Amino acid sequence: MRFITATILWIVTVTQTAGCASSPAQLPPALDGYRLSTREANVCAAAVTTINGLLIPYNGMRLAIADAAAVPTGAVPVYCVRARKPTAGAICFVPVNTRAIVIQVDELPLLHDRLCGGREGRLLVETADLLALSLLHECGHIEREHYVNRQAGLALRPAWNAEDTVQKRREFEADAFAAEVIRSAKDISIFDDPERQKAYVRLSLTIPAITWNLTQTRVIDNFGATALRLPSAFWERGYTHPNIEYRMLLLAYLLDGSPGDPDSVTRFEQLRKEVQLEKPPIDLAIPPTSTDGVNNTRPD
Image (cartoon, rainbow, N blue to C red; front, side):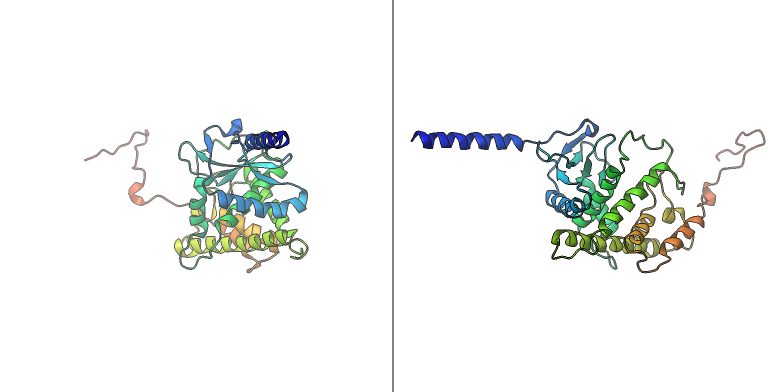
């Protein structure tokens, strides 16, 4: 009887200890204003599993969803969060001076609808695969240590531009890392490493599907934008992230050499150079002024 009682007490103690280990994770100071969320939990877990299938054999990096206090030693914590105030931004980012990845779960359905929504002619992409590709890109920022002593974004008014900035170069570097990791699994047999091969297949199909959808949006949904060389079709609105279609074309090229049209990247780059800045309509033109700079018109 004493033995049984002691055994029961030991089981209770171990259970309580395990319960402490699974207590809610604490967000790092860089994420003040956010709160952990279980929304889209299955999608986030599936995306992390896909990326770990590629990363662990490649360079030993591992992601772990930070839903408990104990994240495995050396793993990159992934925080699934919601902002306390509604925000519009990327679905994933790496906080300044923090070796972690943040998923903004409220942005997931919005970005998926923008890139892969079920409109006629679009190729369907699983939300988990879109998120997995985003996570792998953020792993590139961590691998290149872009988050260390990172400066705030350029304090410039958003404007259409094709400027070459440090921030844009870092985005290209992170994309190149993602392509390198995916490509490293190309010749792996499904019998040798089924998880890695499955992850390769999913992402190698996701990239051209997103590229197709973006090109279709530009050519069909925004009919005339290409012929008019509108900056909204080929340039960037800000100074930190390159044009998304341009990035996906480059990513597809890095992944496969020359998918589809071998000149697709070169053609897009040429169109970027031919962009014509949009002029305001005539009825919005600045009214004439006198030679002394004082407006010489008056309302009726």
